[in-house]
Image 1 (cartoon, one colour):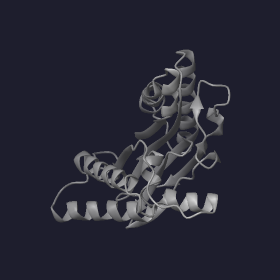
Image 2: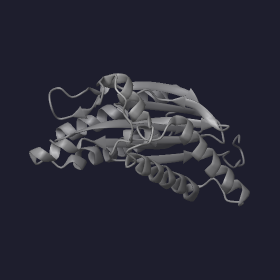
Image 3: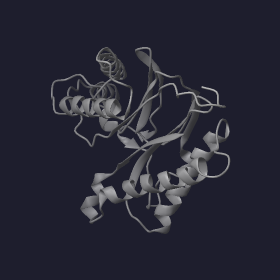
Image 4: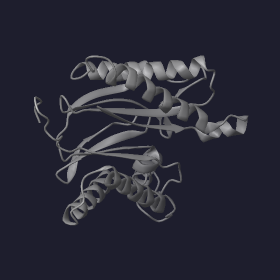
Amino acid sequence: HRMLGVADGVGSWEAQGIDAGKYSRSLIEAALAHFERLVCEGPRPRSGPDALSTLEEVLRRACDDTIAAQIKGSSTLCLVHIDGLSATLASANIGDSGFIVIRDGAVAYRSAQQEHSFGCPYQLGHHGSASLPTDAQACRIPVEPGDTVIVGSDGLFDNVSDADIAEEATAHCALGAREGRKRDVAMARQLANRLVERALTASLDESKETPFAKAATEEFNLVYRGGKQDDITVVVGLLTEAPSRPGLPP
């Protein structure tokens, strides 16, 4: 069992003297703690169909913890649970952070964005107009060894297209294989760093055609070019075949 997550805090709270990052950090820390208690601990870890409802419960409890601690701010949140026992991925997502699954060089799945209007994503938060945990988009999909799961903030997806993310991930893993490197944490970290660099470069390019530029052109009926300068967070999971152990299936 592995959980990947991204929470993208809203920087505009700083104008009101609120630490814009504290809320998002608290969400992720609480989510990880509840995931470990609900999924990983105990005599029988929750798996299969239970994983989806459990992840939604993790999201709800994490949000409740921030309210109880009176932490101010707001944030998008994308949680992904990779369940090796059932070869499935469960997700719960609020807002325009999201995830993408790359398989055999192509996009196998891409989460949808949640926005009230252009540039106004759903957000968990302390304020009365914040979204609720029950607003989360939840899904459960099959995954396979060799899949690459990429979770990111909108700073990634606004500046790098899905096709370019797939190309980058595929090329990176293929190069690693040719060099005899394992699909391990080091390779995942290198890919995450590479995607951040690519998104940052695009965000600063005023002439580049980016997903954000395309969306703005369609929304406002004008020609817009360039990237979107924003926080960029990327987490990568590389799925591999688990080594067989005596008495257990591979």
